[in-house]
Image (cartoon, rainbow, N blue to C red):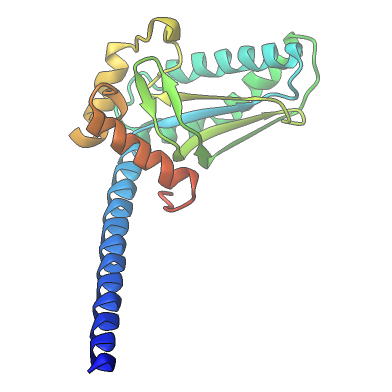
Length: 221
């Protein structure tokens, strides 16, 4: 009888452990599916810019900003009629040589002879705030610019829709850019990047960050 009772207790314990494991697995898979869906939706809506300075010296960092400004100015001029990320990337691809020349000329005009390497691809970005818009960590299509040895600090921003020329100190993003983002995102995704007041939205944002930072999903295009 004692052996039977012990067996029944062990069986109940094993079943309880199995149920807990299955519940955890279900929650994990559900969370992963949710995070992947939102991340892919965000990635499909924005085209970003990633500029790497030659070094962390003040001069190289200042040069990086000048290169960034000229590239963004040109991108804004050629993508004014774009309404989707796909259109913006297509325009950037067809003007890749011009981006290269603009970066090289800006560097020369400022007294440097650094080389420039430009690629358009899918890259990992950390969480970044653009005024009252926050983009969680993840993989995004971007124009990547490497200046010289590209060993300095990075600059991340959004080329389309443009979220770079904002007054970060006041936390204000251009309304037109936000409207463009909203038009290209589903309601859930837009709430996650634009609403930092509700605890549920904050939790979802942190969930996306956690999965991205720990490599638990691959929302790559």
